Length: 233
Length: 126
Ligand SMILES: Cc1cc2nc3c(=O)[nH]c(=O)nc-3n(C[C@H](O)[C@H](O)[C@H](O)COP(=O)(O)OP(=O)(O)OC[C@H]3O[C@@H](n4cnc5c(N)ncnc54)[C@H](O)[C@@H]3O)c2cc1C
Ligand code: HEM
Image 1 (cartoon, each protein chain N blue to C red):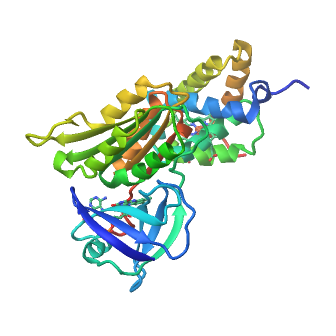
Image 2 (image 1 turned 90 degrees about the horizontal axis):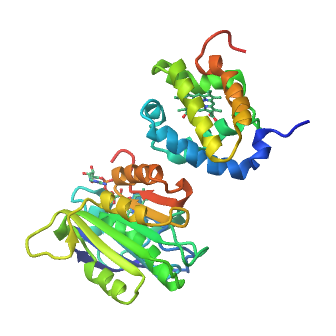
């Protein structure tokens, strides 16, 4: 597998495109393990590309002292990597095209959601789709144009950006915490039909899952991926 | 032989619905919620299903010793008779919301009562 392109986005996020040697059967929102050839360093990353796309898209938050993300930030196109997977249950299922979907993510938690929402739209999902993307500062919200364009083309898709600190001059960013927004949205939906996806910071994922469940969303209807740091990191 | 309450309310599938109801009550009740502070909610839900299957007379392999072992850590954290009372109360509410009648709920409560000493680690291990 080869790195095709790396683009720096807002919020210290690297958008990485990978070319795969042989086709990979996967769903947007699943994750793969990237393995560095030199020393076998391995980290899981979620697939932001829609199902079975030949070019994989990843969103990697760049931590300056991060072993994998630091290395990826300085890698150049043409670099070869190994890949394992796909893994995980966090993906779109077309069992009911009319159910409401609620997608909630912080930071690069958007990556799996971006894959999931595109799979849902491609499947002709008719129910309402609400995507909530949160960050600490509004300047860290990346992919805003891509999401706005997607929403403009689909009447049933609403994208809401949330940040605790909203810089002056930035419009259309909600300063309500993302978990409060998510609980509000869930309360407006039919709990028995709703399906929720929560991805990103482990504290958000476990806290929100619990509160959504207590609020009446069935446990099975909440699909989640917590971006747990690698052991020993 | 009469059917178990487990069979009467619909077996395994009904248990899944019951687990959500029961587990939600337990997490929302401050008298007992701290004992269920497991971040792995799926794992915890599977155990609640074990609990509900057992007390409704469904297929299970739990023994008194299992019940001691499963709750030993909780007893060390202060699990007492009051907590067992709360669990039996929430169990009753859950079953009543599922349409189980009062007489049957009494039987379920009696089944739960029968392992009270094991759950609380009292008396001789069997
Ligand atoms: C199922 C799953 C899916 C994932 N998907 C993605 C994804 O799509 N995009 C993505 O960016 N990440 C994702 N992650 C996290 C990713 O696997 C790595 O943990 C992350 O990229 C950090 O790895 P690293 O080698 O760069 O940093 P490491 O060398 O592992 O950590 C070094 C230092 O980086 C900093 N750091 C690392 N992680 C964090 C953190 N979460 N918060 C604050 N500081 C941190 C700390 O200072 C840490 O000491 C996912 C994790 C899981 C389990
Ligand atoms: C009323 C009698 C009770 C019965 C019959 C009972 C039964 C069970 C059963 C069958 C399990 C699953 C064990 C397993 O599969 O590993 C279990 C686990 C558990 N029970 Fe109970 N229980 C009772 C009372 C209580 C009470 C009063 C509390 C706390 C308030 C409690 C808290 C727990 C917890 C937290 C677990 C999971 C333990 C773990 O994670 O290992 N139980 N119980």
